[in-house]
Amino acid sequence: MEYLRRNRILFASASLLLCSLLLVSVSLRSPTARDPVGRLLLDALAPFQVVFGWVGRSVGRVWSGYMDVVDARQENEQLRAHVAALAAQLLRSGELERENQRLGALLSLRGQLAGAGYGARVIGRDPSPLAMTLTIDRGARDGLRRGMAVVAPQGVVGQVAEASHTAARVVLLTDHNSGIDAIVQRSRARGVVKGGTDGTCRMDYLTRDADVQVGDRILTSGLDGIFPKGLVVGDVVEVGRSNRGLLQAATVRPSVDLERLEEVLVVDPAATVPDEPPA
Amino acid sequence: MRAVAVIGLVAGFGVLLQTTLFHALPLRLRLSPDVLLVLVVFLGLHRHTVGGVFAAFSLGYLQDAASGSAVGLNAFGMVVVYALVYLTCRRLWVDNVLSKVVLVFLASWVKAVAVLVVSAVFGASEGAWGPTLGAVLMNAALAAVLAPPVFALLTAARLPDARDEN
Image (cartoon, rainbow over all chains, first blue to last red; front, side, top):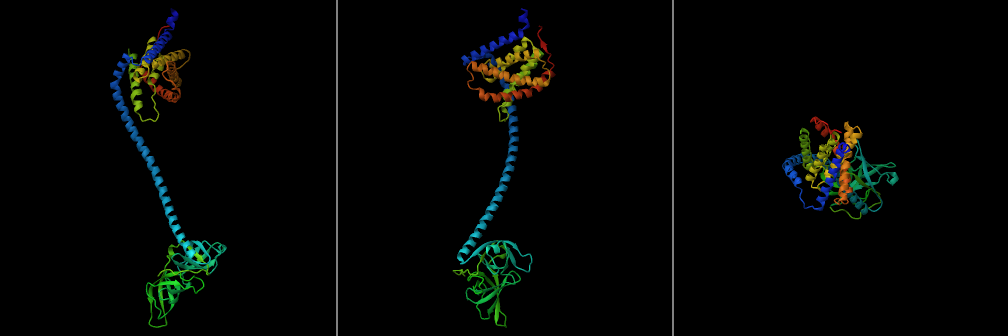
């Protein structure tokens, strides 16, 4: 008896374990059998569960809202970074497309010219306002030499004045040291296009009776042995006739935008243009 | 009587938390710390009476009623936990916070194993071991975390230790 009394907790535990197993057995063997005590507890808990459930859902909604805000913030930052990357990519893509167009035009021009042609990039401009020159990334090692013609798809750019091993300096047609033998496309009147001082050129040595009008297109004559015949030099914007003297002069605006030039084609003097461009 | 009221209140609150609040929280894992188990461990540590055993059984039964599992499964697990905690604290000194936390963690595993074994024996949980183990680990850890505040609450209620005369 004393043993039982001393270990009654363990005996009670064992009894309740057996009782539990009995309950499990009954519960599993006859699932339709109802547990009255369980139903009573369920009924008692139900109203409180409603309240606790409401509190839980409210807390859940607040928490979800907070997490949504955090997620939205992170997503916003990611999207901003993505947009910035895409904008940069778009910019690069646009730049490449424009460069592709320019190089395509240059390549087309090279195909039109007989003889050798060297594509080159403009890598520098003259720091002095008095000289109109630019530097290109091709030099003597590429076959460039002094006197070669430099052109763009829009027309004449200038000529190589000096070629180092890896680069070359180009004198633009607007430089006062430049002189290009040229003709008026419409009337075939001949003269020499020289550089001016304000970014334009001047066509000198036109005879007084030469037919020159504003809007006339000026082309290279090919007689100077430097520029192939038929390249566009520019358009006449002003004709100056004085009352005396045997000659007249015209102001010519270059067809090439020399300030925005990025790629050029250096042409061997032996090159020729098959067809004259339209007036 | 006071002890029964306090334990009943905490048990009711615990069941409500387990069946509503924890499930309503938008957590990615389905976590539901076993508050009643912490209570049973407390009983095993401080209420060494036949009433304590019945209280453990009743808490398990309450959990069965609320959970919809086979009646008697949790009751069985709770009685096993109570008996083991009772035997442990008769032989080992378990009175600081850390040892109680560890005890609750181990008790969670004991209960889970007991419930799964009984389920397996009666054919109620075939092949349920794999997915259950991860959840058991998480819930055991949560119950262990929950143990200090629940124990502190019950201590603050000034429930006297009860031992049947040997």
